[in-house]
Image 1: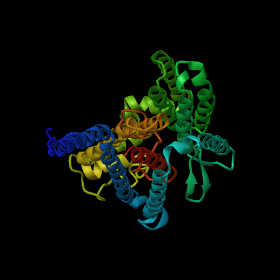
Image 2: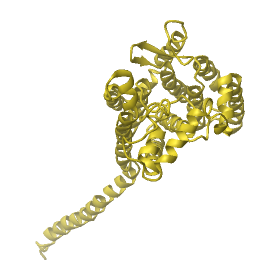
Image 3: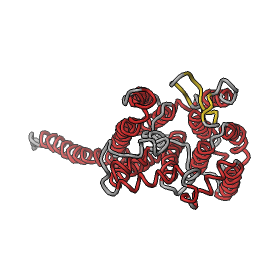
Length: 409
């Protein structure tokens, strides 16, 4: 009787263990490189966002620094004449900038999606303040417009809050009714009622320029929200028609429109401001006359540190300075849209698009008025012009956009 080989069983066991190890080793080796590749594909899209968010925040910081420096230069003469110190207006702007920085960081830490729950309270507050500002002896009237609330130099423009309210309310409606975006009545009924009322109240102040910016914010959200093209054409046609009527209905607005075509025809009256603005811009040349060395602010150019600070930039820093400022706004738009289009949810995306259009359209209207492409406006250059309420509300909006970028990171 032949005895079985004692080595067969160990060999079989040995082979089985070797086979298991050889089977496990390739599987492990295959899984090890595959996980980073798969994760890389998923992370490739948001991986760019933190860098874009940093660039966006840096752009906002540079615009604020630029604004503080130019307000100091542009306001020094009027500050000395009115308050006895070249630093008075500058110190006020420094306070507003500090509050704006705090507002930015608070908004940047506040989840942008939570703003959807605040849409209605903010809208109610805006409606209330826009009504209160129209009450005689309550709203502060300057140059025929009743736009401010407050005491002494601490003033607030309800129209700035109205921009934020329209942004939040429209984004909220288009988010909650995303499945009914093709139903024009379902979308426009609440928006026309609420946002139309806010625009009307701002127009009564009167403040046509802010009303136009609010309308642009609303249109941008409707476009991003997917409203049908034919509906948008109807809305745009009606809106442009109403804006044209409002522009020529009041004599002073009609004079500004006519001055646009030939400002030198009445250079001592209706065309004075735009003529002085063009002189300041032309005097700067390519490199400018030097920071603080401009002459337009010596009571030649009214509102040099507010609505016409871009003229002072052109005079003192030249074409290069103007291009730097414009480049920063282009960067704001590019980085902001990148963040908005990568937003984690529909509401945040609509919010981001609206904020970008808000800031860049306001900047475009201001600059176009300063260089004579549009009628002279009373709207400030975001982040750069002197002012408190505009700066703080714009910084809140920018902080919201930065939070959207952080949420995607």
